[in-house]
Length: 117
Image (cartoon, rainbow, N blue to C red; front, top):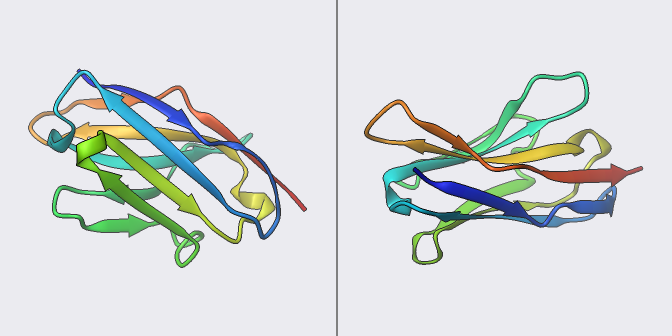
């Protein structure tokens, strides 16, 4: 079982940048595909970005070209660099770890991002 802890959220003006971090512990980090999800008020949680073992990345259309997901297996961490933020990017961002060898998903507690216009 892996434990996830997000950090880096906060309040930023539109056009600004934030870098979210997710530190994993309790298991072998490379066994997991990692992702960032966002949940805004009144909306379902949605996938923002993901990275699989082969370093393949995927992004929601709304963030392509502005967000970048990366991972550092040596530091057991995954990051989300968010540039040119828009008010609609606001919400709670959750780190997700999906075990590659079984049907197990793990979530962090979330970090809030607020983008002022």
